[in-house]
Image 1 (cartoon, rainbow, N blue to C red):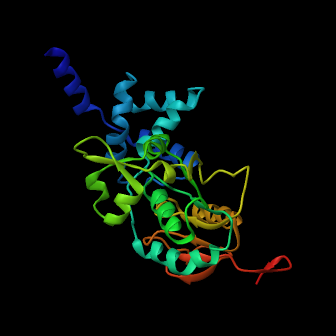
Image 2 (image 1 turned 45 degrees about the horizontal axis):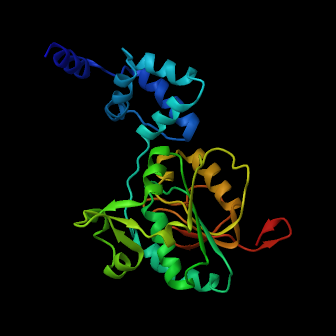
Length: 285
């Protein structure tokens, strides 16, 4: 009983001082571009408090020192996982998938392989939605999805590809029957089918860092992540995404995002959809 009381007292009194918040804020911005504005102290304390307690640290200052000195980088990765927002859903912002189906997929239909980058896949729902839409339009066996995220925790969940029935309520019944298999006799969850899972490769990529093995894609989805970046970081990220688009390729961003206030070389197609134009010499058309 005494141990329970002591733990409760510790959890109730552990506070994030302003200088501790500023240190964590700077580290989060420098390592993965997350802009933690003043007023987020309670959120940070809540999300990192479990790591502080599990590590046996008496203060957030001690925890911070451990993160920046721990040689393997695992503590920093755990901090990223705790602070990253991994909210997503199947068929989120459905207008994008309709545009992909009707306007973009026909352009890709003659290709032997259609390869798309899902650049902030979170727990995987977006990547599986992309794979299913493209399978419906261009046919199975020709679709490849590179799905990336900075959160190892989210990627582990995505690779497992098991979702509760509640999380699948937005899916058409024909999708559930064609692209998912039930888990158990009285299923409360479903798993993405093996043939769809084989088309998606998951990788950990930090979008604010330089991508060493750069490739060009006809389609990149990078939705609802740049809202967490400041303007200068957005410029760097969009520049790198544009360099990973092939000529004529499409970039999709989230409905809460806009590229109107940053410099980029992409053509506006419609709200939250942009396209890489043809080049003339060394300049954009």
